[in-house]
Image 1 (cartoon, helix red, strand yellow):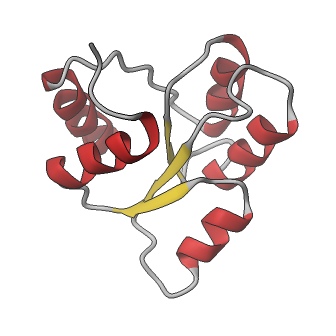
Image 2 (tube, one colour):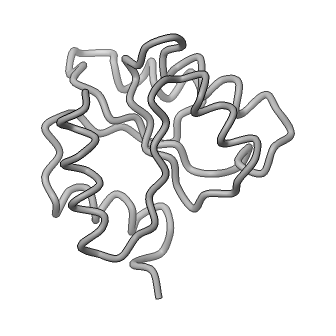
Image 3 (tube, rainbow, N blue to C red):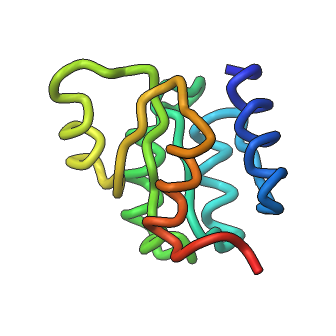
Length: 116
């Protein structure tokens, strides 16, 4: 998990994105209630609270990220996993390992492009 976080931070940093990191699903929900994000990249298999439940809580709340795109980033690549993510409130789905071009294409798709 930690290696994936560091890799994603490095890729996003090269494109000058500001990155916030939650170490578990509960922290993700707490941070999403306090600060508006352009997009949330959600690991589905986080400790304390999984990403599916965290996304449901973000969507059910009235915080600033209720409408924010939430993209599942998961090692789960089985048939039906994408549908499960979408049914739990996620906007889109990426399976690991995530390549830089795929990551930026997904961000661009949901946010309109690179930061100014």
